[in-house]
Length: 196
Ligand SMILES: [Zn+2]
Image 1 (cartoon, rainbow, N blue to C red):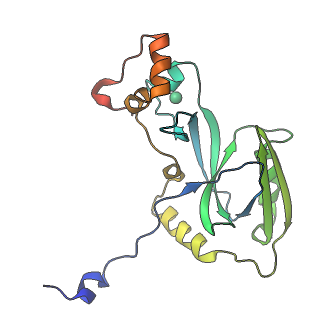
Image 2 (tube, helix red, strand yellow):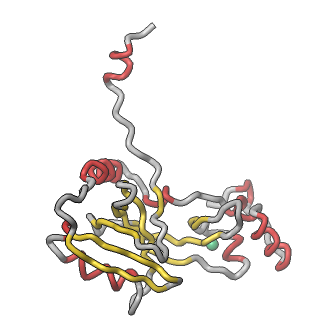
């Protein structure tokens, strides 16, 4: 037997480990930016219905790279999604120029009032749109979510957790990828099934 107060007294509150990716589309996403600190990543989009997500390239012996589909380099940036009030992960492609997310967002990181701005972001194919306006006075600034995220980040949270992780061997078993591998021929899963 144990006193519930003794059991939980020294237990640290658990921080959210699951981060969702921001899903940009034609419908505007309302985002709050609070940091320039992110993580670089190389992602494949896997359209197979069993995956239907961006997944980190497992690197050596990656079957998606093998069939001629290289990963997209992105910078992962934590942002607050106003709709969910949660910190989510924005994929900023490594591209500069008109209509690219990096070019549209970068000037704002020098602003002292970054956290007083609302970023309304849309995406149409590879082209992004960003409209910036002052954050409404009554807006929820989601400071608790941001503080929780900062604490988890200090403890080593990687933004890659927002994306499902597949080893090279596991990706090779995804039906659509398997069919392409069989068509090309010559791919073998890494030894011991580890894709690292
Ligand atoms: Zn790859």
